Image (tube, rainbow, N blue to C red):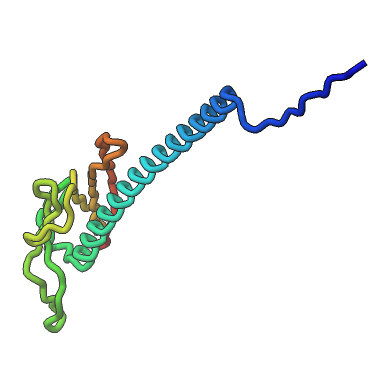
Length: 167
């Protein structure tokens, strides 16, 4: 009896089904990576906007504190600010014997979304600035709002900082 030789089979490629499955899996992986990238980019953008808002608010408040630190309590105008949006004051610049020599009056105010010190803007995009006096402690409250674009949508980052200065 004569046997037929078995054909030698070697795979030289992949079937069309195998290629489609691999392309489908690769597409799912790429879409997942793209959405992770997009999400991380929007978080980065929002965090950066928040950090900028924090920085601007802190610098403005630090400037207010440095100006108000040596203000004379009896030079405040209004005398007893409660929720005041503007404050005038003088600082001690020297002594004449036992009498303090005061600086010319300085003014810090909230005007059209800006904090203004003696006519010069020290912070923009401010939504509120108030001063309140409690004894010898002057409290300054500052609210700041900055727009941030996240995935083409405008969002507002709002920061409110409060500090107290002993006069």
